[in-house]
Structure formats: C-alpha cells, structure tokens
Amino acid sequence: MKTTLTSLPWIRYWFAIIILCLGTPLVSSASDYMRMDTTHFAFYFHPQDKQLMKSLIHDAEILREEIIKDLGFGFKEKTRVYLAPSFRKYQEIQPGEEVPSWSAAVAYPSLNLIIIQSPRATRGKNMDLRKVFKHEFTHIALGKAFSNREEIPRWLNEGLAMYESREWDLSRVSTITRAVLTDSLIPLSEITHWFPFDEDKAELAYSQSCYLITFLISEYGKHTFHRFLKEYSGGKGLNDVFINVYGIKREELEERWKNYLKVRFSWLPIVTSATTLWFLATVAFILAYIKKKKANRLKFEQWEREESQLSIPTR
Image (cartoon, rainbow, N blue to C red; front, side, top):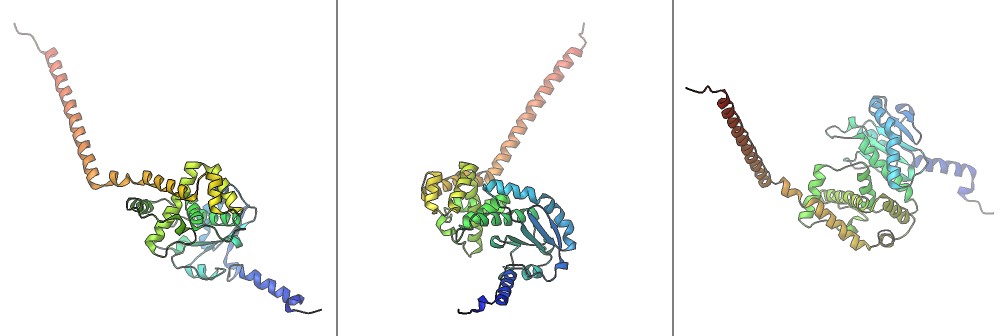
C-alpha cells in the first residue's frame, strides 16, 4: 500500500487547521473584540464601538428579513459581522488579499462573513452603518443562492445590493440623467462580468445596475423577480431565463429598460434648468400680483359700501 503525506493522520490534522485559518479573519486577539449574537448573526466589535452597534444589532434581524423577503429565499447559517475600529485593523482581518483604500466594507459569501470599517475610522465620509450592512448582507444572501454558479452578473450583484440599501442619491440621479440625455448608457453585456475601471464610468455602471433592478421589480413585480432569481441561480443561461420568465429576449428587455430610463429621467433637466425656474418664478409673481390686486379691489368695494351705509342724508 502506497503511503502519501495526506494519508498520515497528523498531516491531515494540520492541513485542516491551515484551511480553517485561511477562511477566518486574522483577529489579533479574541479579547480585542466584544461579541453579541442574534438569531442569525454574530457581531464582533471593539468596546468603543458598542454604542454604534446597539442600534444595528437591535434591527439586524428585521433588516435581514426584509432582504430575504425581497430575494424570495433564505438560509439558516449564522453570518459573522466584524466592525474594524481602524483602517489598519480593517486590512489586518481580511481573510484574503488587501482591499482598496476607498473600501468601507466587504462581504465574503463563501465564508458567510462581513467586514465593515467603523464609522469612526472613516472620517470625512458620511457613512450610514445600516445601509452598509444591508448592502453587504445582500451580497451574502445572493452569494448563497448562487453558490452553484461560478459567478453572479455584476449588474445583478451590485444593483440588488444598492436597491436593498436604498442607495439613491442626487449624484446618482445626475449621473443616470446625463447618460440618458447623451445616449451614453453602458450596454448590459459590458457590465455583466466586470465594471469599468474609470471612476465616472464605474459610477454610471453602479447607477445603471441599481435602476435595472428597480425596473425589473417595479414593472414586472417581485413574484416574477423571485422566479427570475430562482431559475437563474439554478443553472439556466441568462438569455433562456429572460425568455422563460419575462417572455422576451435579453435585447428586447434591455430596450424596454432604456425606454423606462428615458421616460423617468429625460424630463428632469427641463424642470430643474435655470430658465425654467426663472419662468416659474415669474409666473408665480404675476399670479400673486393679480391675486393681491383682486383682494385690494374687493376691499375698496367693501369700504365704499360701508361708507354709503354710514353716511347721514342731507336735508
């Protein structure tokens, strides 16, 4: 019988330990972190962040349920959530390579793990911890559903995470409006496997992804979206799923989505331009002036009636 290294009991033991360590955050010391558990989460954080975490921990199960309901499926395993007190610690506890300096949080679906920078460590940034948590947990939940596939389309992964965390602000509205008006939307095929490296184009890719998910849910309903996720995560091709679920090819669905964006965003510059605002202000001024003139005329007429009633007739 041939003996190999992995057949030796002590080798197998240490091999298992190494694999386990590679999939675990490199926490310097367990005593550095406090731990609080809910039904589906284990939260780790430093004592100075306890007050920050109270509200999130209190609402975590509700936020999770909202996401699970929107996705149409769930899982039972407990998700670990680390709140790193500094950027250095944030980098140290990553289970893989270093993350970009602009990153505020990262999710590892295969490890059921979320790592977030403490808002105290992201000075100068307006960080909403609840939104960040919802964004990252959506990645976890979606990753669990798509565990049988090699990858999740970027527009689906990022778009759904943004949709769940309600990341709709004026800058993204401005980005998508400009792209609609200049006919410079990025084709869906170009944001399926990766996003552009250029910052402006990457921002547009995120915005488009968010509004694509919004379109699918608002126009066809959550039940249909649940069916889409179920069939696609089950291994069917994207084009086949679009036909089976939405009854149209990907190209036609993409065209409908673009028309939806044109209807939703092309009117914004009209009502927000300086010329329009001055015109509306002028109209408002004229209407107010006419109203005031009418009120004054009625008042004068009333005074005349009162004077005529109070006057003494002469003999």
